Image (cartoon, rainbow, N blue to C red; front, top):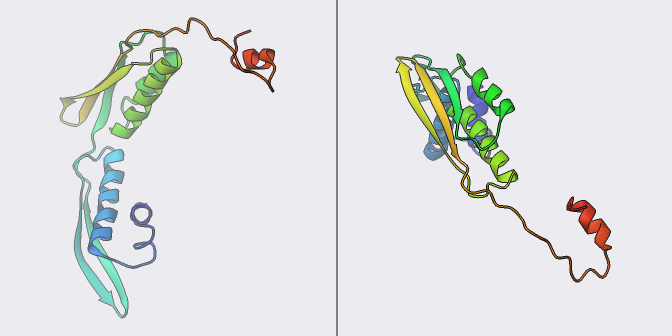
Length: 173
């Protein structure tokens, strides 16, 4: 998977076994991100040397995973309406490796749900608190802002489409 992460970070260089310093650094960064997504926030991924074997260059990489950090409690606060599916997703994170991107997906779903229901100015924040040496609690807070309601819609200039079709498609019937 480390090779895959490096290949994805630099598809036109590393995947083709061509190495440049900037591309190699992109590959190392992708490997660090892979470890961070698995709870190893302090993982160290370093290039030790580049060995030559004939015409082939082989990068030698040292990985120190460090301790794994897990999710503690993950809470959703401030929602303008019940969100049982998202609350269940948040609760399932407890005990899993700490992954900020997984929380970001939950947060994005929460704000999209608010915007879909008319809270167009909804904003959110994610706060992480270390509760133990290797456990992080997280709180996703949404500020829904005002509910925006559509008062009326006027259909004008419909020459080629019947008004009933537009009303049906917009669910105005």
